View 1: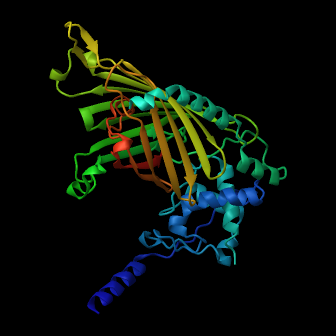
View 2: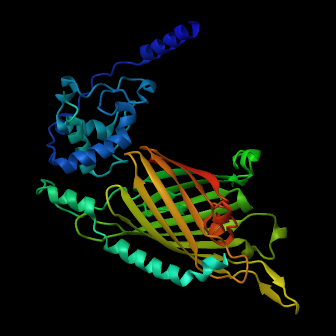
View 3: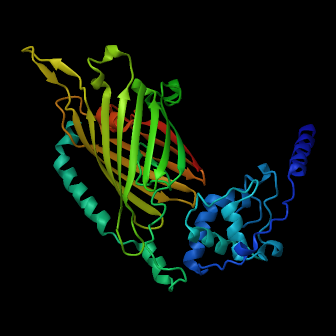
Length: 129
Length: 306
């Protein structure tokens, strides 16, 4: 009972420590950049592979922000299935993946080919509910 | 061991057949993908096949992979003792182990330089790997080819050596790999190892004879099968080719799992090799698969991108 209460306290403490994500607006030019990669089966397949390797540990399998490392983050990784996230343009997604911020690492060096990031953007669209 | 060397001509034929097969196999998965795609808005250009292997290591051998420019890697490699003692040393986990800690950096596109220190023989190594050719999705090269070389210095006390040069050994390996399907990749890797100093003995006439030659040829075959997006099964076989006067090394079989994330690769496996340094493995492997002399081992790599 005591340990269960302790666990609950620690758990809620952890959750309480995680900050909601601050507003993140991509620069206008980046947000207006058109996605040059068609969202076809090949793109989605590559996007999924990259997502599993680079993104899933924090953002979760379906982009719900429930990956195994999500609880260790200082900021809430967000829920990509929600309309609030999906309303961002492809260019804005690209910018945020590429540049990173706070807990979110920059991927422009790890994924130097733009096509890889566009494939991830295309795959992220599949999370929309 | 003799039996194995009797089969070397057969093995050579098998190796040739294997090479031809590797070159001829069609890139089914990639081709299937490209067939299903209509002209993309992105300009058509050469598309190297990605993730033939997902780590620099395939257990005790190098993979064809050279990470992207600016990648800094730290390796922690561990080989426990042989499993034969069973519970006495918990299947080798509490037996004397061998450890290597290595660092490497991709200084320019396709070229990785590294160094490391290994517990066995207190060996320092410097190494380089260059990606000569990359397999192409769009009808270019059917295989990826890389070259790996190292120079190793044995830093044990000077009583072990007649001259400073005796401490040096070299290893060169050609890595030829093909991503055959999305899940299966294979690699063939012929190698040559060289030790400046090899142990000798005095025969009945008092003449000094060599126990081994200074150069040793070998060939390795490796395969990777993706079980899930992050987990791979890996298998490897190393066959010695050079016949030495005595002390012929045993072949190596290793198999295990690889778990890969964005910044790590973790491999856990069982194999006959214990020495980690490739020329030491190829020259001096005493663990015999027929006697079940396997060692449990792991490789951990941590990647940073600068």
